[in-house]
Each structure stands twice: as C-alpha cells, then as structure tokens.
Image (cartoon, rainbow, N blue to C red; front, side, top):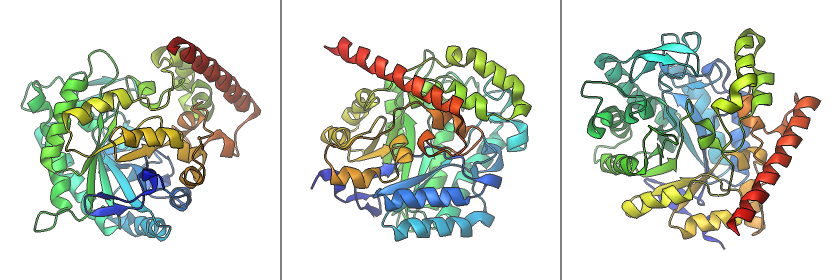
Length: 425
C-alpha cells in the first residue's frame, strides 16, 4: 500500500488518506447559499476516495463577496451546510471549508458597498473605486472570521482554511504591492501582518476548547511568492508562515500568485479568453471586448508543468521543518503524488484533477500509473466567472465553437510541453 492511502492526523482530525480537494472556486451557490450542484459535486468527490474535500471560497461577511454565486457564511444557511457535511461524512471523507474576504476584488452590486481594501484606490479587476479600511472596519472584518468559524463548527465542518493568499484581503494587507498604509497596519512586515494576526486569532479562539485544544483543524493558504515584480517574495513569506505557526494553525497550504495581477501564476496555462467572453453576460459587453482584445496581454501564459510550486515550497519546508505544510500545484498523477510525499509534504491538494474526474483518487489507488485526463485548457476557469465551474467534458451547454477552441488550446499546450521537454535535455 502506498503511503498516499494511509491515514494522517491533522490537528484533532484523522484523514483516511493524504489527499485533499483544494479550495478551487466552484461558483455553485446561487443566492450565496449552497446549491444542489455544490452538494452533488462534493458528495461525488468524497465518494471518489478523497481524504478531505474543501468547499471554496466562503465569504465571512457580505462585503467579502466577489461573485454573485459565491457562498456567504451566515446563520440561515447552517442547516443547508449541515446536510452537505453529513453527506460528505457518510462517504468516509472529512469536510473542510475555505474562509476569506475578497477585499478590493468586488463591485458594489455584489458586495453591497464600495469594495474594501488595505488602501484606497481603483481596481481594474472589477473595475471599481476601492475604500481603504479604517480601524473599526478592520476589527469588524477580523471578528467576522471568528463568527463564521463558530457557525461552520455548528454546520459540521472538520476544518477551516483561512485564505491569506492570491491577492485577497489578507494578502492585500501582507503585500507591499497593495498595502501603502502609513499607520500600524502598513510599512514594515510586522505591521503588514497585523490584520492577518487578528483574523487568525479570532478563528483560533472560536475553534478552541477551554484547555486550548482545537475542536476542528485550522489551516491557512499562503503564497510562496506573489508572482510579479513588486510583490512579496519567498524570504518574506517564510516569515509570515513562521508567524502563522506561532499563532497555532495546524497546517499551511503553500500556493502562489495574485488573481488581480498574475492570475495564470496561480492557475497555469493560457488565459481562457474564449470561454470567459462566451459566458460573460451581455450587460457586460464592454468587459467582453476588453477581455477579447487584451486578455492575453494582461494575463500572459504561464506554462503548466507537474508540481509547479515544488521548488518554492521546499524552501518553506527547509526553513520550518517542524511545521506541517500541505502541497498544492500540479498534482496530476500517482507518480507525482508519490514525489510530493517523498519531498516531505504529508498531505497534498488537487483541483482540476478532481473536477475532470471525481473518481480520480480511487483510480490512483487502483492503478499506480494513473494520470489525470485534464489537459489544462482552463475552460473551467473561464466559465466560473459567470456560471458554475465545469470541465468541458461534462458541460452540457458548451458550443461547437468552444469545443474547437478547446482542441486548439490542447494542441498548443502539447507543443509547449514538447518544447519544454527538449529544453531540459
């Protein structure tokens, strides 16, 4: 039996194996509450053998919403979430959920206010003006992380993942690219970590028993680097990870990139211009034109390769050998999963592999040569901005033109992979 399929103790919970479905945004929450599609998908992933499946991106308050079909944690949806966690548990898996706040990556019509950020300004991502948070708002949002954690414990979740990466609000405070504050929340790294510390402390407080032990597992998602000049780099983010460890989190998931500045550094591959333009509503005709004309210029291709965050992740493991790090990024085969464990990461996350095939883990267990059928064309990424995230192989409303585009991107990716292989020889 491979070590992949052996149990692992993560804080107070035991996973049946080393696999975790990553917090890849599903866009399956109409009305900001869990929909049937979300229920069916995560139940299927649990049935497919995953150790723990992560529901993604749950906003801690309304101002943290970046999409209309995104989860917003509030008391009235607790019974619906409980049905979801019960179904996941019935299949033998653990249930995790990612907590976050999108910060400046929203719009008034979605979040109900002028979007909040570490610093005032204008965000082209939405596009919208952004309000730099005052101290009262900072305290309010930090407390919302704790309140949301209390509700999620009631809903039966086994783990919460605090999202501190990818250019969302906590990351916006951490990064000098987005944090230009002159008060105690800006300037030095110690100051820029202050908001993150407040949020994590609230989560730890809500998830702790009287003796200090955790009721559920607490993890954080953190960048290894922001992925562009002027953003945070490895050395500084290692210090952030060290502070997370001191605050009492059970594990850290190592990722990378800024969705508003370097989106393909996060996801890899080509920016999905055609699928994004096709599924955007016509009321956003101006955005369709902008994406069509400048999408690949603003978001240039970052070629996909297996285990693409491994090099940087190893630097974190070396610097903090007694911390549990969860690997994510390009795990597409049992061979790759074995390499992750061999490099000292006891757990690993997967996104597109279990979107393309919810039985991926069971198939890895049955076949040591098994590899994902995902070709990384990112159709799913383009679709999730206005519809639910689906692989093109399972999408009923895909058009012949989009299928031709998918085939063309597959051929382009194959050529890039061959070129990269030749360059390595």
